[in-house]
Image (tube, rainbow, N blue to C red; front, side, top):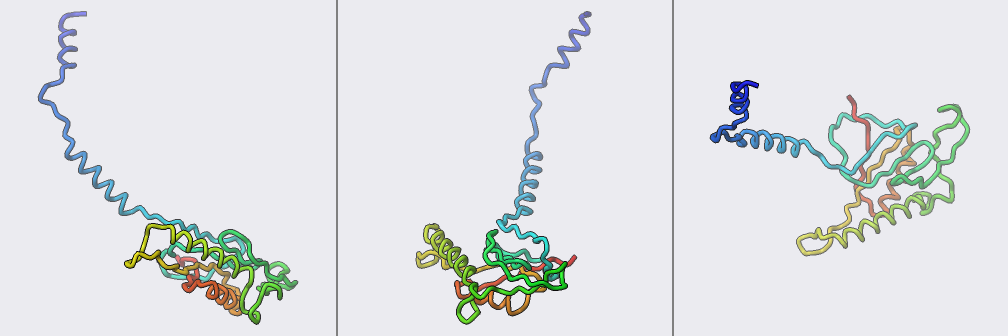
Amino acid sequence: MSRTNIRNRRSRKKIHKDFELQLTSMMDILVIILVFLLKSYQTSTNSFTSVPGIKLPLSKSQDNPPDSLHLIVTPEAITFENQRIVEFVQSPGAIDGGASLSYEFRDEDLDEGGLRVVRLYDALNRAREKAEVLRAKSEARDADGNPLPFDGLIAIQADKRVKYETLRKILYTAGAAEFRTFRLLAMKQE
């Protein structure tokens, strides 16, 4: 190797003492990205998905439903928080491949003159009691220092073919279990 090559390599490897990395503009970019990500991030524990075999009504509303307990009314049964609570009586017919959509309850499933669904009422009461225990243990308090009151919010995803009489019994049952705010879910119309 010649001496000129060695000198050229040494001069290339030298870093000038006055060289400084400019972090100001890089920090600005990172802050802008961070603010964008925080503004666009949404947290929700809701996972409302469409159930096979259920036809939901359409809605033009763009609002997302708030966090709440989830009740699903399908042609076969009522499901609350992913547990099948009540099975409907299926009668032979000509609708939907041989089974009519009757949405009829068994006599032993109803009480209070046929208005309240017993097993649904029991499941809703257990959920309310659990929520009240969790609120009592929570550090969140009202102005007087008492635990926050039970909000009584329930989201209902019901087939659009459900009879009014059936839906009325379900809403009556939820009201009897101290659920006072109902959110009837619908599909977003594109």
